[in-house]
Length: 153
Image 1 (cartoon, rainbow, N blue to C red):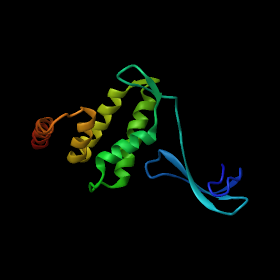
Image 2: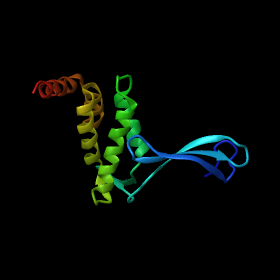
Image 3: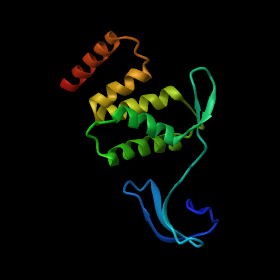
Image 4: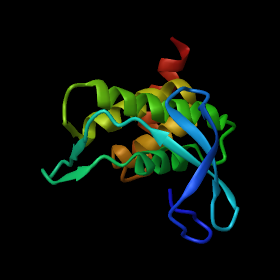
């Protein structure tokens, strides 16, 4: 593993342990050249996943992109970061174990919507506003009304 401080090629693993959700291995490393310590995370990737966009274009699944979009929807909300990580890891695990190598972007959006619905209604509405391409305030109003009805049931 390349040192992020001096770019030396070799580092020594000092400690390894699973993350809280058991989705990755956390490793503490020490550079053999400069002695700096740093942490890496290793995730098991079962298969390459391709996201098929609505216009037919394909791109490699990017966990960081998923995390960014969920993070934006949840910004300034009282949500424990470990719950967000669990949501993102759960979606990634579902994709990897689906048996499909090409997943429509719409299916991923639906998974995020379902997860955010259970997590936080404001984050759910924020994500929906981008995902469903709300164009004016009436779209928000109608969607928020449907969310309130679901919450009452």
